[in-house]
Image (tube, rainbow, N blue to C red; front, side, top):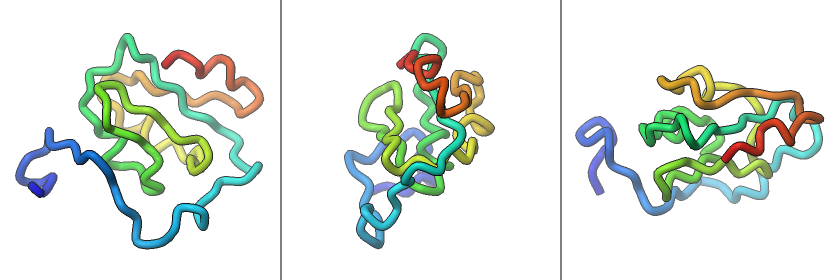
Length: 99
């Protein structure tokens, strides 16, 4: 498997965590929810590379966020070059349903 430093465009089929994902469930405390505008996404996958919870599925051109594990930290939005990830209040989740 190539290392990301050697081939930054490499996308692994799966990502295995060191501990069971059930330990990382967000619960009901997340206040911000990222939404990806698929029409502006370039597929650079920096959101996947920087996500500290590994909750971004990079198996397709437009990443998909697993909200069961997303903490709403906003790192994905901050690192997104085309700025296609926007954070919305959890109560406004319909505004994030762009992807």
